[in-house]
Length: 275
View (tube, rainbow, N blue to C red):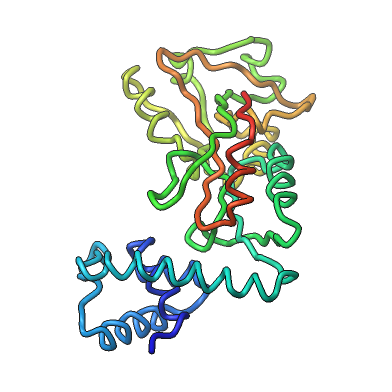
């Protein structure tokens, strides 16, 4: 007789395509995922995954078990909720570190109000989450998405900088500037491509580890920086300039979701996109 818990671990491995990611998602050690899969393979006398340096890939039998296991796990959850109606349904939420979460407070409140039994906890990693507020470029294939917001980027300079009185700035002017790098930016490849198209290099004087530090380094006069519009703030020490680019330089923030109650899905679908 098959136990439910190994099927949870199998489903996580199937959806993540990685033992490591599955372990992170399930908050357990990697050997536990490996042991569960091997036990299932032994009990069913099949091979569920092929393994390589790139990760794991489901076999034909793996695809077949995934459908059956998903149905069984869902039925198990429905039985449990039917007989324990007041039990909290814990949903793990991941928030991309460079996203200004305050801007999406209403989104989180809407999800919480979808079901009185929902309890949202913060996940340390995307692999551990069922919900994620994230740049659309980072969304894994197993998530569905609802677009929330599209935002551009601005150049932030200290108030006494020669460009501080300007309303905007062109990419060509970047060559004369010294930047604080934002290495965690999910749009950095797009930004570098725009710079390369202009055929010049960016001069960096240091790296920030988060946007609050980035703004602080600019305030100290150690360089200028490119930052999402949602992090612009009223501050007499800083000026924010619109960046003129030949191509659009924006990011799309989405609410990604998977395996959440139907009431939450319906609430998410009803959320309003805003600019």
